[in-house]
Image (cartoon, rainbow, N blue to C red):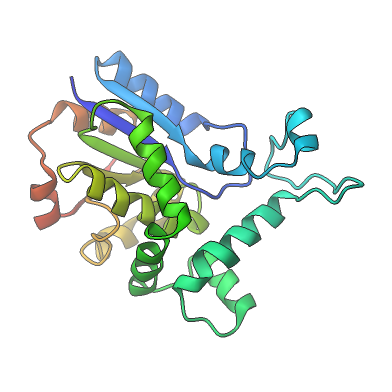
Length: 234
């Protein structure tokens, strides 16, 4: 049995998670006899920032903003923008705030900028929250940490999760997958060495069988993957 944890990083404008993809991976892992926890940091992050009125009405469930109430409750875009401005922007050197926000949201950043911003974020209050959440998610250290990305706006928080996971569990294998990684396709393989600061391995495509295969092959150590980071096709 291999121990693993799947993490969904902020921010997707959706709070009713976990989403179907990570849930299918967890089910596949468990069917194969492995232990797999699922930590939806995105949903937890949004729920903690909902107003009491939104929470009492089941909060946000879709990726569309709900209209502001009479008390001016925050919309999902408000929560996202505050996170980007207060949490991530200070770790970058953009003088034009609107240009910086666009770059973060749509992935118009260099690998160096992503690495720098993720490092900054890992030492921030957000990083401390991620650390506590990872430690509390499971009593035993995982051997594999999978991080699921839906879109480019999650890249810096995902890299932050990778940094912290490796600090907590030095031998853990960090694997990135999901629609964003799949959408990059050949681009990931073309510069996988430059992306190795973020993950040890990348999975492109449907990943249920690939994830189970990784869990079965416990001989793949983090040290091996760092010296030879790779891309797996699901």
